[in-house]
Amino acid sequence: MKISLGPILYYWTRDSVRDFYDQVAGWPVDIVYLGEVVCSRRHEMRFDDWLDVASKLAVAGKEVVLSTQALIESESDLKMLRRLAGNGLFAIEANDMGAVRLATGQSFVIGPHINTYNGETLEVLAEQGATRWVMPVELSRHMLAELLAKKPQDMETEVFVYGRLPLAFSSRCFTARRYNLPKDDCHFMCLQHPCGMTLKTREGQPFLALNGTQTQSASIHNLIGEINDMRQLGVDIVRISPQSTHTGEVVSMFRAAIDGAMSATEASVELAPYLFDAPCDGYWHGRSGIEQSKEMLT
Image (cartoon, rainbow, N blue to C red; front, side, top):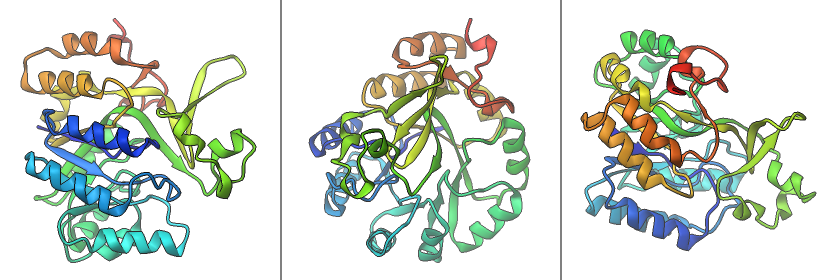
């Protein structure tokens, strides 16, 4: 079973991003997704910067995939999408159907933001050239098992196993709204929130995280205790979403669990100190996403 590192979903400075991927080159991850998925106003990293990072990671032995923006809103967004699809060096992760159309005829990855809910959809996407799909985060283990029974034989399956869950996108920027700023003059306030901005209920319970135009879970989705079950189901790749702190330690814990150097229980205990918010795994078990299995709390 392979480990992938998903695209950075937050807005970090250019130096922070490049320093982060300098470290990633030495981590036990097999696949690295690069690029801006959330907001086209995030300009710290330019197209050539991403290609430069991609080339360095490829030299370090990583499989590199360029991720596309999930919500295309303008001609400039479409222009960037065309550049990504036509880069000629690296496969892309398509996060909307426009990207699928542009990637048709070449190998590409179906991202978690495309609604892949049945075997027929997987068949259609495979016909377009998809060789891997990332399960939408809201699907359960039961639904995954049904899809795996129907998926094209040569298509790889990837599951989001760690990080704040990417739940939805909007044309409105929630971070800018928090500061009473218009989206087009947001002062790039996302830079002040490298892990998103936690939103609490009236009772003070962390509920969601605001990340520009993206809404995430406040809780940290953590499926390290389900590694053996995923292996038996036939999952090929587990995805860790980069966070601003301790991502390297998280990768090490998952690698140990996958390789059998730690049991699921031991890995869960070792990983617990690195969680910066409450854990959750409800979606995996077919329940409310915010819930956490009792057995993983003990």
